[in-house]
Length: 272
Length: 257
Image 1 (cartoon, chains in turn orange, red):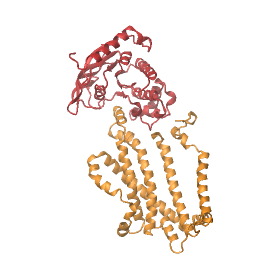
Image 2 (cartoon, rainbow over the protein chains, first blue to last red):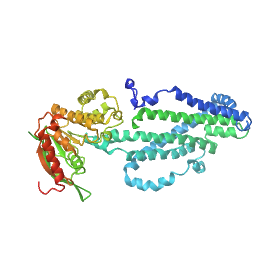
Image 3 (spheres, chains in turn orange, red):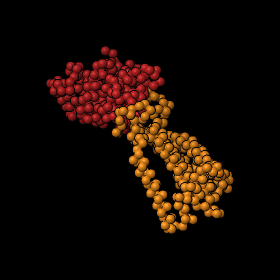
Image 4 (cartoon, rainbow over the protein chains, first blue to last red):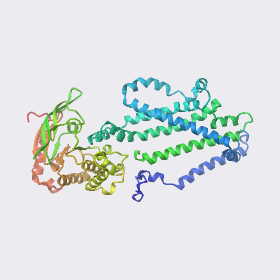
């Protein structure tokens, strides 16, 4: 590890020092990639390779995006999506972590639930849209339920896996130094599993956003970016608005992942 | 000298038929550094786990301060061979050393004792690092400091230097001797290295192969102050190590003892 002694402040986690450092070169390269993509898009459309009605160029989409970002109706849609996503993620964590803990520690429970879990897990969440629309309607409850359903699995499986991976020697060490069950749980088990759980949360966060927006689109109700994109695409087809909505959804996903990645590095950098 | 540890006909059988240790009886006096040497896989670790209360032996008993051991005793520490899996990677070196003291002594004392123990093993400057940023030898020093900060009556060491290179091993052996001289902690060290057992011990208990029995209980008649070069080439050292080697080679199954 190439950590430097001079960066050993208490607030700076030494393991993260390397990767957390702002690297202008890498950032510049990343930005160059984006610019090349946008430029290519612009050129392809201008050259007439695709009709501008179907695929408006960035020079049309981005001014439209700027307009939308000051439009209260659109902002409300963004808030609706983010809020549904956040509630769904919180619920998924709240259900999957205790469930994972229970399944990891109680053998017969894991055996008993095995078949059900293996049956439920591969079901694509959006396949349940009609069922939920009929049973609980098209409101926010539907998209939140779907995102919870889809987001449960990564957290659940990572939690179970993490508990199996707890180092027995660390448990023995704690016991030798007089730790009881509770202390072993709080001081050894939880710190060991936390990074794995967070990895599950990151996966669920990405899946959850996709499911929320898909559900908004499929139900055409309950607001959100998905419904906004659907509305822009139907009637007087406004592809510029559709694409601007897509860009916003993409940026949301990027920001969510970046934040969680930072949290991971900040607190669980020791794991590498 | 008073007796710190007593084993009375201690036996352990795994899974009904695999006997790891058989009727082991010996005592360790207060302040003594006793080494147990035996072939690999002879049940040495089982023995230490039974003494540490991590494993309930099938038969016989362990007495610490004359009281039978049930569960993990309060004033006992263990240094395991596998330091990298025994330290907590999410804690700094300082917090690792403080770990056993949490909930036992106040914050200030805890920090002081940890700092003192780290200084003792020569790691005062590494307190804010994380274990995985240190070399293997340094990690094992942290594990040793953690055990020392706890100030146990009995310190068990399970092949503590088996996973470090030869040079580091010599350093750590001398460190252990220095700490023993300074602190007078009773130590029971398990090793498969004959030279190490003679070099470190006041006494060497030679165990047979599985199931482990005591083949011999040898007093190490060397000056207490030892030196990696002169001690190892001295006649008593060479004689004793040969005797241990003969014992270990000659009797895979002990006839009588």
